[in-house]
Length: 251
Image: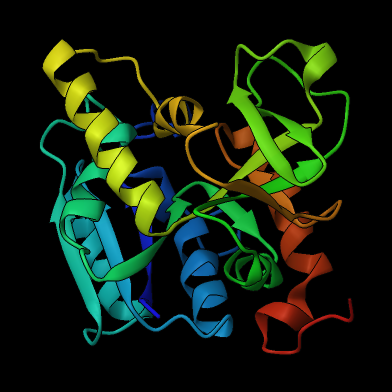
């Protein structure tokens, strides 16, 4: 069985949060920044191998990780094309540097109940996506179509009538999915395309690998794109403070 590595995609600038430094290390009001809760949640879930993909202000991100994670079992890789190729290339770099690992990809701008990480790792599949099943989504949400627990489509362009919920920024790639992702990413890189998300690569993978959804319950997830999103993130933290502190909630 392959060892598990968590990869935090922290290359972007976060223009809508001000753009002065990476948004993952911007404090949320009087609370710590999103990266604090990501690192704390991963540790609480028993994940002890970390990779951080940097881009904008890499030393600031490294300094924060060193302070809150330590220097052991952490690897850094920089995406020099973060502004042009974005996060699909960040995920590709992480895969290239992790040949013997199952890889949990975590967006740097999400706050989730740490129990979500455990559910993702416990779900069978070549590709596992954390999904909150709900309706009333908007055009910015990364929408997901499901057939039972099987993921059949993903994308911001997915028609609302087919959407069963939102992808919550945590995913897991195992052997077959990793090989296919690298193959598809290589093809995209040769096209010199610059507006691709890693979820767009996932979309191309569906039907070729076993893709499954892991449950995210209401109130367990928030994404921070703008200052207006901070309140929802703080609500997740308060709701699941016991879980962040090492006391998992009952199923």
